[in-house]
Length: 217
Image (tube, rainbow, N blue to C red):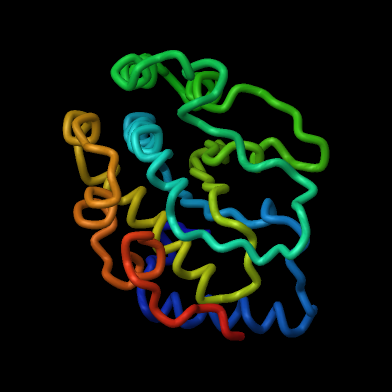
């Protein structure tokens, strides 16, 4: 969970990793499904900022799907994979330009949800966990939730995922709609222009030779 009150930095990463690993050891946590882990970015986002994040995710969803997200499950998952945002039943037949225009027309969070995360029931899962990305309104703040990483009990893997999504969201916040809409969806653009972090590229970019695996608790 990220918020303006706790920036992503090395002190945060060290502390958060220790907490995750301590909880895992104390309660002997086990991975029973890939649908238990989320990264949520919380702030007093303006609706236009949220729409830019939505646009960037729609453009790069298929690229993100090819990242090196390793599942720890040894048996088939009881739940289906997270639902697509870009290819949901409402926008699946739209081209990218039409999707961008539809996002522009959204006036509020509810409009974005109806467009990008239309209501679906999956027994055993809360609504916030069904789509790869979701928007949750908390009074004066909004949480942008990402459900794209298989569940892990390894603190360093959790940290990497949070850092990845924080940088993804920050890019959308720092750039205007035109810059986002002309982004070419590719691994090169994702890591060289958006993420811009060598550690995360080594960890997630499928084009890279793998570094020694993270996750030793």
